[in-house]
Image (cartoon, rainbow, N blue to C red; front, side):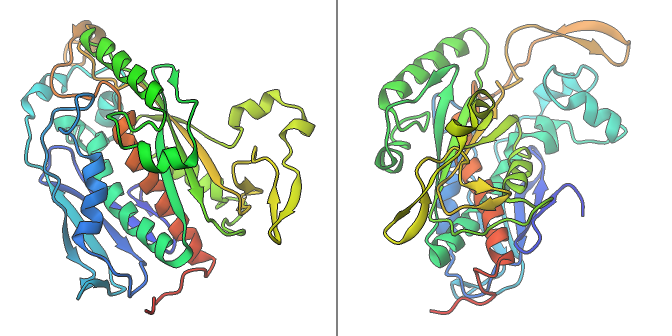
Length: 366
């Protein structure tokens, strides 16, 4: 398999470039009989698309999904599902100057070397966050499949932007408030501070990183295939495929390195006849297998590399140092638009593992 394919049973193939004709995904292995429409996909895509927020890129793509195959009379057929959106609002000219002057923080230079100069440089090509539209399409199918068959609920949200961290929120707040503001944060006070900080940095021609947290409720015990297909390792691999991701942690994560074993261990107890843990420092995964407790994963995003400030680079044609300023339409932070992407990627991996564990049948009835 190549680097554009993920999954063993619920297989997703990603295709397209930022300024190419389209971006999309093909799913192979989705069970037959799942009720599915373009509206199901569109509602997720609308959460990701640019041009709808003051703290995101002004690129005005409609991102209207088209399902080309795999659906008949409103249900999946069991054959490959091909979905795409067309790229309409394209302005490639500002990127021409970076053909020989690679942008710091971007994949320009490494892509040029790896692909012998043939990589599509327009809008960062295959390395653009634009390709996540295809992941969201596939994730929308996976989310519906998990919800309908297992009752799984997946909720991601902005936990931190520019050092400002959400602190005061509940599960109900996540469900009802995360999309009530531009930064997708369930803590309204923190959201206001995040927006203020983003606008300050944007005026300075700079950008901000942050953290998206995702909680998954309703997972059964037993998902995961140790050791190289452990649930957390497969999730980590998939999440690192999202452009700008630089870190992934589960449960206590790196904080566990500063705890005693007696503090980090999650004691078992019985609640309503079920085995549960009193705490959840493991984040819902032990030994690479789901525990039945909420899956908690945090994803760290670097600041967008396209900034208006002058930066030092090299001119590959003359092999001398030079300076560049990156102009165009860019996100001052990717965190708000990454929220539905993280949900989608988590859903794709969980759907694959649920099918592998025979928890989802090949044909859905009723």
